[in-house]
Length: 120
Image 1 (cartoon, helix red, strand yellow):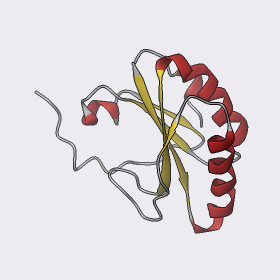
Image 2 (image 1 turned 60 degrees about the horizontal axis):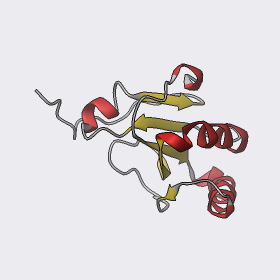
Image 3 (image 1 turned 90 degrees about the vertical axis):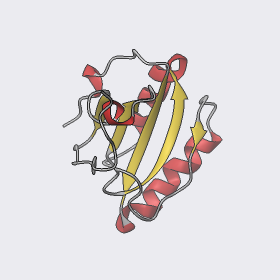
Image 4 (image 1 turned 180 degrees about the vertical axis):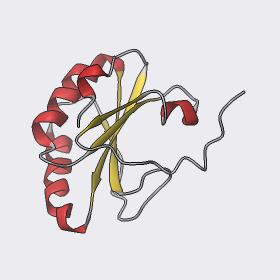
């Protein structure tokens, strides 16, 4: 279930991680190429054909700022198909960013948070 509509634009910067698997790689490549060719004010990360960081699936990242939030969210919702997108704010506190400042398009999945330590 998507919690996108409940996700407020309250941070200066965001990451969206588009999750995929071997059987959806062609679909995600099409999305990536469309994002690269778009006029969206984004920075595209590279494809990870393995689990990286806290992400339990293969993914690529889209980085953007709060001024582009609405435009990027609408674009992702229109282009993601049935892929899951994990969205989080970027505040400098990785633990909070991946636990409290999150939103999902599609089904949420459990992240591997063991690498992050809560700040005191």
